[in-house]
Amino acid sequence: MLDLSTIILTFNEQIHIERCIGNAAKISKDIFVVDSFSTDKTVEIAKQLGAKVFQNKWENNHAKQFNWALENLPVTTKWVLRLDADEYLTDELVEEIRQKLPKLEENVTGVILHREQDCFGKWVHPLELLRIFQYKKAVCEQRWMDEHIQILDGTTVKFQHTFYDHNLNSFGWWIEKHNGYAIREAIDLLDVELGLLETVQHNISLQIGAEATAKRTKKLKYARSPLFWRSFGYFVYRYILKFGFLKGKQQFIWDFFQGWWYRTLVDVKIYEIKRACGNDREKIIEFIKEKYGIDVKAIQ
Image 1: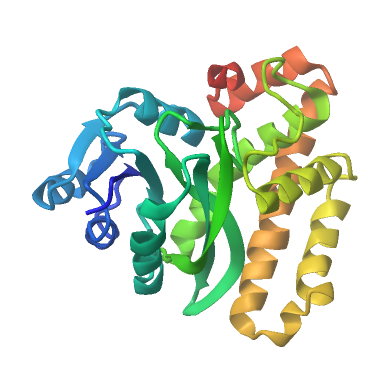
Image 2: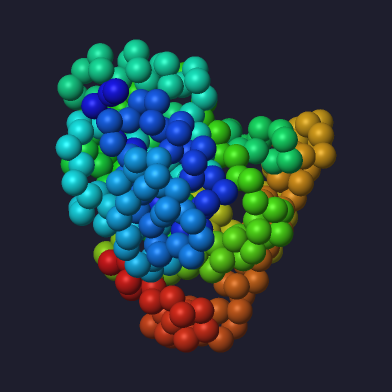
């Protein structure tokens, strides 16, 4: 096995966890599952498969949970791979990691991987994400949404082959999940626009990968655009200008729901908050805590 540990965050992932652990085991010396007190068989399955399971209370923030893992897990390997429970590496990527990772120069502390998303049997939404990094030389950005692994020292390289995000739950589950995401996205956009959190850095980091950096630049521009028009414009960009309409019904479903419906839902939540609070930062923070049970400052 490689000098690499895989960290997987879970909550009620019994439908995915066997596939994910079995896949990660192809290259991992250790597999750590950080569970948020699942009520299904996630923990039982993970232990049976040889994963080292730790539990930590979920505080509605992925970055905080992953950084807890980096600070508290007994990692002994040089490299760490971050995987979500519904993700897995292709055989081609597994072989590429085996061949290339041990030969990287010491100043290379992060590896960017290519990910594609499943939508009813079709791969959509390709992204490049920094998912492999040297232990103690990276953290997860302290953000409420759209967080990335951030390299603290060194440089990054990009591997060629793909890993997949293939969720096996129903579309109704996806809708419910994104309703929960929407308030976190709203907090993130309000933070970008109004600076809700003084300690959050709004400068563009050069250590999260070129595509992530470009995405963050676009998000700054998006946050300053008019509510509702921006979600419609984003859909037009994805489905019309990027020729999504030529790629079948699955691409329409993805572009409509993830590109327009979801972002309109985010704007509705922002509209609700601003209607009650205007641009008063302290009022907004209190409103979100009262109405949504989220302590915005807890990320600090």
